[in-house]
Length: 226
Image (cartoon, rainbow, N blue to C red):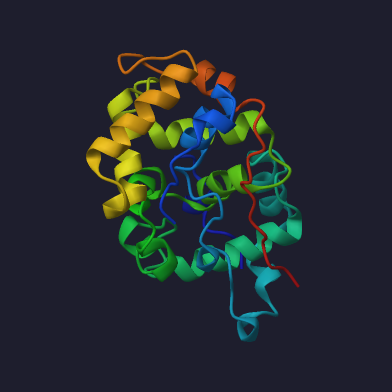
């Protein structure tokens, strides 16, 4: 069975950083890099071994290579077949797109403190877009691409800039009742000032590159294959 054409159509609380023991850029990197789900919910990838077998017949070789090119070869052909199988499980109505409601049926995703923010990036993805989204977590993806992904999580209004309040809002999601509002603002203000920024700064992608460029981001996901 060939892939549906619509599927190919383009379309733990945060610890307070100990600033006296870290460089300013390292401290800022901790704040900026902790927001995304650095270990992507496994249930978006895992499949039931009992349902294996004829999965590869769902994609033609041309389809697999096209998707592989679209994600810049972040995944092997076997991994793409596995991802397609899981995509079909999520796409319960068979429409060729996965809706926000369908993503929220995954328990690990539903309880993620950033799930609502991620849904704006996930809602209505076709298969190629689904794979492209997950490619940010591939060990074959460059650090620059990973930082670009993190920036998109923070840039909630998609204007190419991230303000102090944008970062603070994500810290609220992550820390919940484990930190008071005063503690969050104090820590964030201190970290940004140590890195040469102020509460009034608007952060662009180059700023994120500057802060995170020398960090050891752990954004990896293992795709189960035969």
